[in-house]
Length: 142
Image (cartoon, rainbow, N blue to C red; front, top):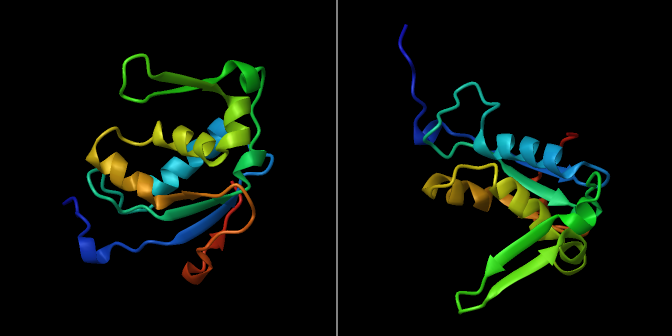
């Protein structure tokens, strides 16, 4: 039996919309990462971008367990000496609620060129409105 490899012109990309309200952050992010990667497709090829697009709405209403609201820290470096910045999940939820889900999904994708390309398939919005109605996204329940 031969292994068949999918070609670029055979890839079909669908658009899905996910409501993050009341969903647990880690469980939601892992399901989104699987959809973006294309792992649920029968012809999954690990080295190709064959996943679907995911639009996440209500990102500010995602749920976390335990004391993660105060204990979980996000940090980045500005590139200047002494430029390490730190923010708690509570502060991120107020200032940049879309980055909570974006960072969680990014950590579950490959850490190479393919992962950076797949990360563009994720669109996260803090409210219920999004500009992707023309793509006719299907609502899925995770």
